[in-house]
Image 1: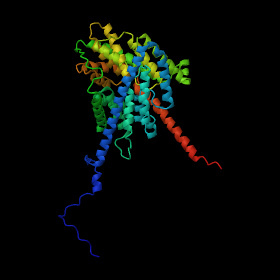
Image 2: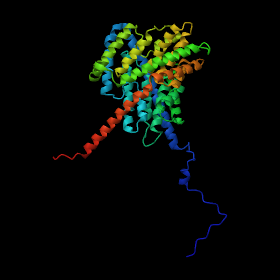
Image 3: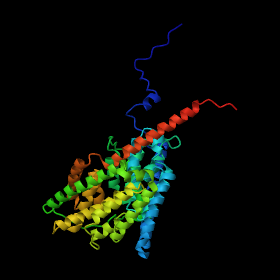
Image 4: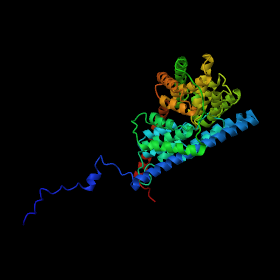
Length: 471
């Protein structure tokens, strides 16, 4: 058989096979492909949905707080009935129909991002969680609980973005990236702080892993911010605060607020972590065996503190903090301690609601008290520094804290004092409470969810291996 003719030396080499060329690691993905645009549209749609829910949630929270104020206007003593009944009802609904909605929502989002199994993540993030978190938080605000909507907005945003995980066989992004992006979108929409949302996703949600600079978080935060501006306008959370502090005059206020805020915020964080593990003695036994009665007791204590303070401690504390920053209604010296007490009562009652916004009100009270001691200082500037100091110490997220406060007060002149206060408070807080608050709360939740997952798998395996009973 004759051999085939040898190729000519001048013949051009054959091009590589298309399949091999497509697998080349440096080959760029075609951005105009229908599949890529399908993923982008799904991501944008989920971000718009998360922002819309967060904004509607914010509007509902304002109405709930206003309705509670109207009830207290009729008679302040109504709170002795409304608060205990509301606390007990929210605790019962959360335990009975919406497990996973109790507390802030930020630890749940962190626990979901650390989980490996999809069913474990589903215990923390789902559309059922979104519905329950919205209405139960509004119910708590209507009852006068000192809770915020910002933490729940993180869980709502993370749940909404997590719906895209394996959406109809299309993998938009990794589960962890979707959760972090949704959390950042929730913060951005809740506070109207896009940069703060991005920093929150990096500093809190990605604390134990390397943050990859991709478009998922940016797209989610940008479009959540756009829908926020479309529905509510380009507003600032606390309005414009023209507080100023020179570098020379601000050395002592920054040092004092940083140190005091670090101790107070770190101590409060440690109190919350210890309380989450269980209260001591007979009180802890009562809270475990009769959780609804315990929640009602926490509501009654909240009502009594509200009556003593003239209604200053109800709700998020947003109105009181803004009025103090504007100089229209000064805060009393006891506001700091009363506000921390009612936040703790809502926390141990295990009703849905966040502690992020109430912590800002506590920081305002901290700045007020220190301004009273350091006479001659600018009260508004001290309050802004107090917010940063307490928030950075409580959350141990200094960058997120000063960025969010700077955006909320529309005050860039205070950037250097805010940064310095956050760094000092963060350093002091780590000595008081070694574990970051939200992560210390997330680990027990994740451990419990994994145990429940293994128990369900074992029960299903036993049911599958059981022999059929004779008829």
